[in-house]
Image (cartoon, rainbow over the protein chains, first blue to last red):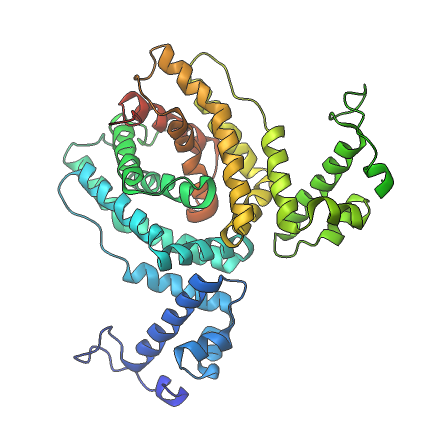
Length: 213
Length: 213
Protein backbone atom coordinates (compact mmCIF):
# COMPACT_ATOMS: atom_id res chain seq x y z
CA UNK A 1 0.00 0.00 0.00
CA UNK A 2 1.29 3.41 -1.00
CA UNK A 3 1.08 5.95 1.73
CA UNK A 4 -0.09 9.50 1.21
CA UNK A 5 3.44 10.69 1.81
CA UNK A 6 4.75 8.49 -0.97
CA UNK A 7 1.95 9.60 -3.24
CA UNK A 8 3.00 13.20 -2.78
CA UNK A 9 6.69 12.72 -3.44
CA UNK A 10 8.11 14.38 -6.52
CA UNK A 11 7.51 12.26 -9.61
CA UNK A 12 10.69 10.68 -11.01
CA UNK A 13 9.70 10.59 -14.66
CA UNK A 14 11.18 8.09 -17.04
CA UNK A 15 12.97 5.90 -14.51
CA UNK A 16 13.89 2.59 -16.17
CA UNK A 17 11.73 -0.35 -15.26
CA UNK A 18 8.50 1.56 -14.64
CA UNK A 19 5.64 0.33 -16.78
CA UNK A 20 4.16 3.78 -17.21
CA UNK A 21 6.20 6.97 -17.10
CA UNK A 22 6.01 9.41 -14.23
CA UNK A 23 7.16 7.72 -11.03
CA UNK A 24 5.16 7.31 -7.85
CA UNK A 25 2.51 9.97 -8.45
CA UNK A 26 1.80 8.45 -11.84
CA UNK A 27 1.76 4.95 -10.32
CA UNK A 28 -0.74 6.02 -7.69
CA UNK A 29 -2.87 7.56 -10.42
CA UNK A 30 -2.68 4.37 -12.51
CA UNK A 31 -3.59 2.22 -9.50
CA UNK A 32 -6.52 4.40 -8.47
CA UNK A 33 -7.83 4.70 -12.04
CA UNK A 34 -7.60 0.92 -12.44
CA UNK A 35 -9.62 0.46 -9.24
CA UNK A 36 -12.14 3.09 -10.37
CA UNK A 37 -12.53 1.34 -13.73
CA UNK A 38 -13.02 -2.04 -12.04
CA UNK A 39 -15.62 -0.59 -9.66
CA UNK A 40 -17.46 1.19 -12.51
CA UNK A 41 -17.53 -1.96 -14.63
CA UNK A 42 -18.76 -4.08 -11.70
CA UNK A 43 -21.28 -1.84 -10.02
CA UNK A 44 -21.93 1.22 -12.19
CA UNK A 45 -21.51 4.92 -11.51
CA UNK A 46 -24.28 5.37 -8.96
CA UNK A 47 -22.69 3.11 -6.39
CA UNK A 48 -19.17 4.51 -6.76
CA UNK A 49 -17.65 5.86 -3.61
CA UNK A 50 -14.20 7.46 -3.31
CA UNK A 51 -13.44 5.75 0.01
CA UNK A 52 -14.25 2.34 -1.50
CA UNK A 53 -12.04 3.05 -4.53
CA UNK A 54 -9.17 4.12 -2.24
CA UNK A 55 -9.61 0.86 -0.32
CA UNK A 56 -9.60 -1.23 -3.54
CA UNK A 57 -6.51 0.65 -4.76
CA UNK A 58 -4.71 0.30 -1.43
CA UNK A 59 -4.17 4.07 -1.35
CA UNK A 60 -4.94 6.50 1.45
CA UNK A 61 -8.46 7.91 1.31
CA UNK A 62 -7.22 11.46 1.84
CA UNK A 63 -4.97 11.19 -1.22
CA UNK A 64 -7.93 10.23 -3.37
CA UNK A 65 -10.16 12.98 -1.97
CA UNK A 66 -7.42 15.60 -2.29
CA UNK A 67 -6.45 14.66 -5.82
CA UNK A 68 -9.82 13.96 -7.46
CA UNK A 69 -12.31 15.67 -5.14
CA UNK A 70 -15.38 13.75 -6.31
CA UNK A 71 -16.50 10.65 -8.16
CA UNK A 72 -17.21 12.79 -11.24
CA UNK A 73 -13.68 14.22 -11.06
CA UNK A 74 -12.20 10.74 -10.83
CA UNK A 75 -14.28 9.42 -13.74
CA UNK A 76 -13.27 12.46 -15.84
CA UNK A 77 -9.61 11.65 -15.15
CA UNK A 78 -10.23 7.98 -15.98
CA UNK A 79 -11.63 9.01 -19.38
CA UNK A 80 -8.58 11.24 -20.00
CA UNK A 81 -6.35 8.29 -19.20
CA UNK A 82 -8.40 5.93 -21.41
CA UNK A 83 -7.99 8.34 -24.32
CA UNK A 84 -4.21 8.58 -23.69
CA UNK A 85 -3.75 4.81 -23.34
CA UNK A 86 -5.90 3.90 -26.37
CA UNK A 87 -4.31 2.16 -29.33
CA UNK A 88 -2.96 4.32 -32.16
CA UNK A 89 -4.75 4.40 -35.50
CA UNK A 90 -4.12 1.94 -38.35
CA UNK A 91 -1.85 2.89 -41.28
CA UNK A 92 -2.49 0.20 -43.89
CA UNK A 93 -2.48 2.51 -46.91
CA UNK A 94 -6.11 1.67 -47.72
CA UNK A 95 -9.03 3.58 -46.21
CA UNK A 96 -11.27 0.49 -46.36
CA UNK A 97 -8.75 -1.51 -44.33
CA UNK A 98 -8.00 1.33 -41.92
CA UNK A 99 -11.68 1.89 -41.17
CA UNK A 100 -12.30 -1.84 -40.82
CA UNK A 101 -9.48 -1.92 -38.25
CA UNK A 102 -11.15 0.99 -36.46
CA UNK A 103 -14.56 -0.72 -36.47
CA UNK A 104 -13.07 -3.98 -35.20
CA UNK A 105 -11.20 -2.14 -32.43
CA UNK A 106 -14.42 -0.45 -31.30
CA UNK A 107 -16.32 -3.76 -31.55
CA UNK A 108 -13.70 -5.63 -29.50
CA UNK A 109 -13.64 -2.86 -26.90
CA UNK A 110 -17.41 -2.75 -26.51
CA UNK A 111 -17.73 -6.55 -26.31
CA UNK A 112 -14.85 -6.99 -23.85
CA UNK A 113 -16.58 -7.78 -20.52
CA UNK A 114 -14.71 -5.16 -18.48
CA UNK A 115 -14.41 -2.46 -21.15
CA UNK A 116 -17.97 -2.88 -22.42
CA UNK A 117 -19.41 -2.58 -18.90
CA UNK A 118 -17.14 0.41 -18.26
CA UNK A 119 -18.31 2.26 -21.39
CA UNK A 120 -21.96 1.54 -20.60
CA UNK A 121 -21.48 2.80 -17.03
CA UNK A 122 -19.74 5.99 -18.14
CA UNK A 123 -22.30 6.70 -20.86
CA UNK A 124 -25.14 6.15 -18.38
CA UNK A 125 -23.40 8.46 -15.91
CA UNK A 126 -22.97 11.15 -18.58
CA UNK A 127 -26.75 11.26 -19.01
CA UNK A 128 -27.17 12.67 -15.49
CA UNK A 129 -23.82 14.33 -14.85
CA UNK A 130 -22.61 17.28 -16.95
CA UNK A 131 -18.97 16.92 -15.91
CA UNK A 132 -18.89 13.27 -16.93
CA UNK A 133 -20.62 14.19 -20.20
CA UNK A 134 -17.90 16.77 -20.95
CA UNK A 135 -15.16 14.25 -20.16
CA UNK A 136 -16.89 11.66 -22.36
CA UNK A 137 -17.13 14.11 -25.27
CA UNK A 138 -13.42 14.92 -24.86
CA UNK A 139 -12.65 11.19 -24.94
CA UNK A 140 -14.46 10.75 -28.27
CA UNK A 141 -12.93 13.96 -29.58
CA UNK A 142 -9.44 12.58 -28.87
CA UNK A 143 -10.21 9.20 -30.43
CA UNK A 144 -11.83 10.76 -33.52
CA UNK A 145 -8.81 13.07 -33.94
CA UNK A 146 -6.49 10.04 -33.70
CA UNK A 147 -8.26 8.23 -36.57
CA UNK A 148 -9.16 11.20 -38.80
CA UNK A 149 -5.79 11.12 -40.66
CA UNK A 150 -6.79 7.72 -42.13
CA UNK A 151 -9.47 9.61 -44.04
CA UNK A 152 -7.38 12.73 -44.74
CA UNK A 153 -4.63 10.57 -46.27
CA UNK A 154 -7.23 8.68 -48.33
CA UNK A 155 -8.35 12.03 -49.76
CA UNK A 156 -4.70 12.87 -50.57
CA UNK A 157 -4.29 9.47 -52.26
CA UNK A 158 -7.45 10.11 -54.30
CA UNK A 159 -9.38 7.26 -52.66
CA UNK A 160 -12.08 9.62 -51.36
CA UNK A 161 -13.44 12.90 -52.78
CA UNK A 162 -11.85 16.27 -51.97
CA UNK A 163 -13.58 18.04 -49.08
CA UNK A 164 -14.57 14.84 -47.25
CA UNK A 165 -15.18 15.58 -43.55
CA UNK A 166 -12.69 13.16 -41.97
CA UNK A 167 -14.08 13.41 -38.45
CA UNK A 168 -17.62 12.78 -39.61
CA UNK A 169 -16.45 9.65 -41.43
CA UNK A 170 -14.76 8.33 -38.27
CA UNK A 171 -17.85 9.05 -36.16
CA UNK A 172 -20.01 7.16 -38.66
CA UNK A 173 -17.90 4.00 -38.31
CA UNK A 174 -18.51 3.73 -34.55
CA UNK A 175 -22.16 4.78 -34.59
CA UNK A 176 -23.84 1.48 -35.58
CA UNK A 177 -21.80 -0.36 -32.94
CA UNK A 178 -22.83 2.01 -30.15
CA UNK A 179 -26.43 1.86 -31.37
CA UNK A 180 -26.39 -1.92 -30.91
CA UNK A 181 -24.72 -1.66 -27.49
CA UNK A 182 -27.00 1.02 -26.07
CA UNK A 183 -30.26 1.03 -27.98
CA UNK A 184 -31.34 -1.93 -30.10
CA UNK A 185 -29.41 -4.71 -28.35
CA UNK A 186 -28.69 -6.47 -31.67
CA UNK A 187 -25.57 -8.66 -31.83
CA UNK A 188 -22.31 -6.73 -31.73
CA UNK A 189 -20.18 -9.12 -33.75
CA UNK A 190 -17.30 -8.75 -36.18
CA UNK A 191 -19.71 -8.92 -39.13
CA UNK A 192 -21.49 -5.84 -37.74
CA UNK A 193 -18.12 -4.09 -37.43
CA UNK A 194 -17.10 -4.94 -40.99
CA UNK A 195 -20.48 -3.84 -42.35
CA UNK A 196 -20.24 -0.53 -40.46
CA UNK A 197 -16.85 0.18 -42.04
CA UNK A 198 -17.95 -0.90 -45.54
CA UNK A 199 -21.08 1.25 -45.37
CA UNK A 200 -19.08 4.33 -44.42
CA UNK A 201 -16.53 3.77 -47.19
CA UNK A 202 -19.32 3.36 -49.77
CA UNK A 203 -21.05 6.52 -48.55
CA UNK A 204 -17.77 8.45 -48.41
CA UNK A 205 -16.92 7.39 -51.99
CA UNK A 206 -20.36 8.60 -53.07
CA UNK A 207 -19.50 12.02 -51.60
CA UNK A 208 -22.01 11.98 -48.74
CA UNK A 209 -19.42 13.32 -46.25
CA UNK A 210 -18.17 16.17 -48.48
CA UNK A 211 -18.61 19.45 -46.63
CA UNK A 212 -21.01 21.74 -48.47
CA UNK A 213 -21.34 25.52 -48.60
CA UNK B 1 -58.48 12.12 -9.37
CA UNK B 2 -59.52 8.65 -10.47
CA UNK B 3 -60.24 6.33 -7.62
CA UNK B 4 -59.04 2.78 -7.51
CA UNK B 5 -62.61 1.60 -7.91
CA UNK B 6 -63.02 3.60 -11.12
CA UNK B 7 -59.68 2.32 -12.37
CA UNK B 8 -60.89 -1.24 -11.99
CA UNK B 9 -64.24 -0.82 -13.72
CA UNK B 10 -64.77 -2.67 -16.97
CA UNK B 11 -63.29 -0.76 -19.88
CA UNK B 12 -65.89 0.75 -22.22
CA UNK B 13 -63.95 0.48 -25.46
CA UNK B 14 -64.59 2.75 -28.39
CA UNK B 15 -66.93 5.19 -26.62
CA UNK B 16 -67.21 8.33 -28.78
CA UNK B 17 -65.26 11.31 -27.55
CA UNK B 18 -62.42 9.40 -25.85
CA UNK B 19 -59.00 10.39 -27.11
CA UNK B 20 -57.56 6.91 -26.75
CA UNK B 21 -59.58 3.70 -26.95
CA UNK B 22 -60.26 1.53 -23.96
CA UNK B 23 -62.30 3.49 -21.42
CA UNK B 24 -61.32 4.19 -17.85
CA UNK B 25 -58.65 1.52 -17.41
CA UNK B 26 -56.93 2.78 -20.51
CA UNK B 27 -57.32 6.41 -19.35
CA UNK B 28 -55.71 5.57 -16.01
CA UNK B 29 -52.88 3.85 -17.85
CA UNK B 30 -52.40 6.86 -20.14
CA UNK B 31 -52.40 9.27 -17.18
CA UNK B 32 -49.93 7.20 -15.15
CA UNK B 33 -47.61 6.65 -18.13
CA UNK B 34 -47.67 10.39 -18.88
CA UNK B 35 -46.69 11.10 -15.26
CA UNK B 36 -43.98 8.42 -15.39
CA UNK B 37 -42.59 9.93 -18.61
CA UNK B 38 -42.58 13.42 -17.11
CA UNK B 39 -40.82 12.21 -13.97
CA UNK B 40 -38.24 10.23 -16.00
CA UNK B 41 -37.51 13.22 -18.23
CA UNK B 42 -37.18 15.56 -15.24
CA UNK B 43 -35.29 13.49 -12.74
CA UNK B 44 -34.08 10.27 -14.39
CA UNK B 45 -34.72 6.64 -13.57
CA UNK B 46 -32.83 6.42 -10.28
CA UNK B 47 -35.10 8.84 -8.48
CA UNK B 48 -38.35 7.37 -9.77
CA UNK B 49 -40.77 6.26 -7.11
CA UNK B 50 -44.15 4.64 -7.75
CA UNK B 51 -45.85 6.59 -4.93
CA UNK B 52 -44.60 9.89 -6.37
CA UNK B 53 -45.81 8.92 -9.87
CA UNK B 54 -49.23 8.00 -8.47
CA UNK B 55 -49.37 11.41 -6.77
CA UNK B 56 -48.40 13.22 -9.99
CA UNK B 57 -51.00 11.23 -11.94
CA UNK B 58 -53.71 11.82 -9.33
CA UNK B 59 -54.27 8.06 -9.12
CA UNK B 60 -54.44 5.85 -6.01
CA UNK B 61 -51.06 4.50 -4.99
CA UNK B 62 -52.44 0.96 -4.60
CA UNK B 63 -53.67 0.98 -8.21
CA UNK B 64 -50.18 1.81 -9.43
CA UNK B 65 -48.50 -0.80 -7.21
CA UNK B 66 -51.06 -3.47 -8.14
CA UNK B 67 -50.91 -2.80 -11.86
CA UNK B 68 -47.19 -2.20 -12.46
CA UNK B 69 -45.51 -3.70 -9.40
CA UNK B 70 -42.22 -1.85 -9.74
CA UNK B 71 -40.56 1.12 -11.41
CA UNK B 72 -39.00 -1.25 -13.97
CA UNK B 73 -42.44 -2.70 -14.74
CA UNK B 74 -43.88 0.77 -15.22
CA UNK B 75 -41.01 1.89 -17.48
CA UNK B 76 -41.39 -1.31 -19.55
CA UNK B 77 -45.09 -0.50 -20.04
CA UNK B 78 -44.20 3.11 -20.92
CA UNK B 79 -41.88 1.83 -23.67
CA UNK B 80 -44.63 -0.47 -24.99
CA UNK B 81 -46.97 2.52 -25.10
CA UNK B 82 -44.34 4.71 -26.78
CA UNK B 83 -43.91 2.09 -29.51
CA UNK B 84 -47.71 1.84 -30.00
CA UNK B 85 -48.20 5.62 -30.07
CA UNK B 86 -45.23 6.35 -32.38
CA UNK B 87 -45.87 7.83 -35.80
CA UNK B 88 -46.35 5.45 -38.74
CA UNK B 89 -43.67 5.16 -41.39
CA UNK B 90 -43.41 7.39 -44.46
CA UNK B 91 -44.71 6.21 -47.85
CA UNK B 92 -43.31 8.70 -50.36
CA UNK B 93 -42.48 6.16 -53.06
CA UNK B 94 -38.75 6.97 -52.83
CA UNK B 95 -36.42 5.22 -50.41
CA UNK B 96 -34.21 8.32 -50.12
CA UNK B 97 -37.19 10.44 -49.06
CA UNK B 98 -38.64 7.77 -46.78
CA UNK B 99 -35.35 7.32 -44.94
CA UNK B 100 -34.81 11.07 -44.70
CA UNK B 101 -38.26 11.31 -43.10
CA UNK B 102 -37.22 8.55 -40.69
CA UNK B 103 -33.94 10.30 -39.81
CA UNK B 104 -35.70 13.63 -39.28
CA UNK B 105 -38.33 11.99 -37.06
CA UNK B 106 -35.60 10.41 -34.91
CA UNK B 107 -33.67 13.71 -34.83
CA UNK B 108 -36.76 15.72 -33.79
CA UNK B 109 -37.61 13.15 -31.13
CA UNK B 110 -34.12 13.10 -29.64
CA UNK B 111 -33.82 16.92 -29.63
CA UNK B 112 -37.29 17.49 -28.17
CA UNK B 113 -36.60 18.55 -24.56
CA UNK B 114 -39.03 16.08 -22.97
CA UNK B 115 -38.56 13.18 -25.40
CA UNK B 116 -34.78 13.56 -25.59
CA UNK B 117 -34.45 13.53 -21.80
CA UNK B 118 -36.84 10.58 -21.62
CA UNK B 119 -34.83 8.50 -24.12
CA UNK B 120 -31.56 9.33 -22.35
CA UNK B 121 -33.07 8.34 -19.00
CA UNK B 122 -34.45 5.05 -20.31
CA UNK B 123 -31.21 4.16 -22.11
CA UNK B 124 -29.22 4.93 -18.94
CA UNK B 125 -31.65 2.79 -16.93
CA UNK B 126 -31.30 -0.09 -19.40
CA UNK B 127 -27.57 -0.19 -18.67
CA UNK B 128 -28.23 -1.32 -15.09
CA UNK B 129 -31.63 -2.97 -15.34
CA UNK B 130 -32.19 -6.08 -17.48
CA UNK B 131 -35.98 -5.71 -17.59
CA UNK B 132 -35.71 -2.14 -18.86
CA UNK B 133 -33.11 -3.27 -21.40
CA UNK B 134 -35.51 -5.93 -22.73
CA UNK B 135 -38.33 -3.40 -22.97
CA UNK B 136 -36.00 -0.96 -24.76
CA UNK B 137 -34.95 -3.62 -27.26
CA UNK B 138 -38.62 -4.45 -27.91
CA UNK B 139 -39.29 -0.74 -28.48
CA UNK B 140 -36.58 -0.54 -31.17
CA UNK B 141 -37.69 -3.85 -32.63
CA UNK B 142 -41.21 -2.46 -33.08
CA UNK B 143 -39.98 0.80 -34.59
CA UNK B 144 -37.55 -0.97 -36.94
CA UNK B 145 -40.33 -3.34 -38.05
CA UNK B 146 -42.59 -0.32 -38.73
CA UNK B 147 -40.03 1.29 -41.08
CA UNK B 148 -38.55 -1.83 -42.73
CA UNK B 149 -41.22 -1.92 -45.48
CA UNK B 150 -39.81 1.38 -46.85
CA UNK B 151 -36.70 -0.63 -47.73
CA UNK B 152 -38.54 -3.81 -48.79
CA UNK B 153 -40.69 -1.81 -51.23
CA UNK B 154 -37.58 -0.05 -52.57
CA UNK B 155 -36.12 -3.48 -53.34
CA UNK B 156 -39.38 -4.43 -55.13
CA UNK B 157 -39.25 -1.16 -57.13
CA UNK B 158 -35.64 -1.92 -58.09
CA UNK B 159 -34.22 1.08 -56.16
CA UNK B 160 -32.06 -1.16 -53.96
CA UNK B 161 -30.38 -4.53 -54.65
CA UNK B 162 -32.19 -7.83 -54.09
CA UNK B 163 -31.40 -9.37 -50.71
CA UNK B 164 -30.95 -6.02 -48.93
CA UNK B 165 -31.46 -6.48 -45.16
CA UNK B 166 -34.26 -3.97 -44.56
CA UNK B 167 -33.98 -3.96 -40.77
CA UNK B 168 -30.24 -3.37 -40.89
CA UNK B 169 -30.79 -0.39 -43.20
CA UNK B 170 -33.32 1.13 -40.80
CA UNK B 171 -30.99 0.62 -37.82
CA UNK B 172 -28.18 2.33 -39.69
CA UNK B 173 -30.26 5.49 -40.23
CA UNK B 174 -30.77 6.05 -36.49
CA UNK B 175 -27.30 5.03 -35.37
CA UNK B 176 -25.35 8.26 -36.07
CA UNK B 177 -28.04 10.28 -34.29
CA UNK B 178 -27.92 8.14 -31.15
CA UNK B 179 -24.12 8.24 -31.26
CA UNK B 180 -24.25 12.04 -31.12
CA UNK B 181 -26.85 12.03 -28.34
CA UNK B 182 -25.12 9.48 -26.11
CA UNK B 183 -21.43 9.37 -26.97
CA UNK B 184 -19.76 12.19 -28.90
CA UNK B 185 -22.09 15.07 -28.01
CA UNK B 186 -21.78 16.54 -31.52
CA UNK B 187 -24.69 18.69 -32.76
CA UNK B 188 -27.85 16.73 -33.46
CA UNK B 189 -29.27 18.94 -36.20
CA UNK B 190 -31.32 18.36 -39.34
CA UNK B 191 -28.15 18.33 -41.46
CA UNK B 192 -26.88 15.38 -39.38
CA UNK B 193 -30.21 13.62 -39.94
CA UNK B 194 -30.15 14.19 -43.70
CA UNK B 195 -26.52 13.04 -43.91
CA UNK B 196 -27.34 9.88 -41.93
CA UNK B 197 -30.13 9.00 -44.39
CA UNK B 198 -28.03 9.82 -47.48
CA UNK B 199 -25.11 7.74 -46.22
CA UNK B 200 -27.34 4.72 -45.68
CA UNK B 201 -28.96 5.03 -49.11
CA UNK B 202 -25.52 5.28 -50.79
CA UNK B 203 -24.26 2.23 -48.87
CA UNK B 204 -27.47 0.28 -49.57
CA UNK B 205 -27.23 1.07 -53.31
CA UNK B 206 -23.62 -0.18 -53.22
CA UNK B 207 -24.90 -3.50 -51.81
CA UNK B 208 -23.36 -3.21 -48.35
CA UNK B 209 -26.58 -4.38 -46.65
CA UNK B 210 -27.16 -7.40 -48.92
CA UNK B 211 -27.33 -10.55 -46.79
CA UNK B 212 -24.54 -12.93 -47.69
CA UNK B 213 -24.30 -16.68 -47.50
